[in-house]
Length: 277
Image (cartoon, rainbow, N blue to C red; front, side, top):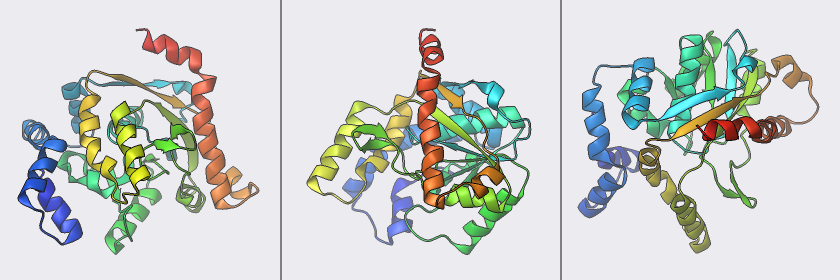
């Protein structure tokens, strides 16, 4: 099914958009180009669809330190969220190639790409969860499939003097303990364009509450064309260790976040070597 951004927003807000705003949004999110991709790959699903996205956009994503990946993929793989599109697509693709299948917890706005519905597990970051989405998440976490997550909930912005995630939500810690899944910290090496962060800083300076940058993410996805990215793998953390560790759930989440952000420093030389190719 092709994307109609005006209808998507109207279904969320219950209000009809003015025609000029609808046209502006259509250009902003590259609606025509996205729908052309959807038509080309109609009927494809899952790993095949993920591969098509990488091929058509000419994006390369590869592991750094893949030897740290556990043999058993029944883990929660948590990562920073620098891009808002190809980070989730890229990590999903790598995990699916490694373990045969994957489920990735994402913002429900990304769920409108039909070919990714077998991979993405939608959550509503703007409000409460429906009973159906709660049950779907429970079923996935109970399964033996690898599960990916961006605990920040939103892609990285200027925060505390640097471009980085905001504090990670604690839910992945409680999920790891409840469903007895080890946690694997990842770090996706990448950034959005300078104008993305510039617009976000202006928005906050003016006190604009509407998150304009979310509407810019499809454009950032197209700006990823022709780029290469690396995903650094950290050492797995046993769920028992998380359960028994001192501190609150939020403090434990903060420690795992810190582990993710330490990975680029630890593997700085290997990142430089990859970028020279």
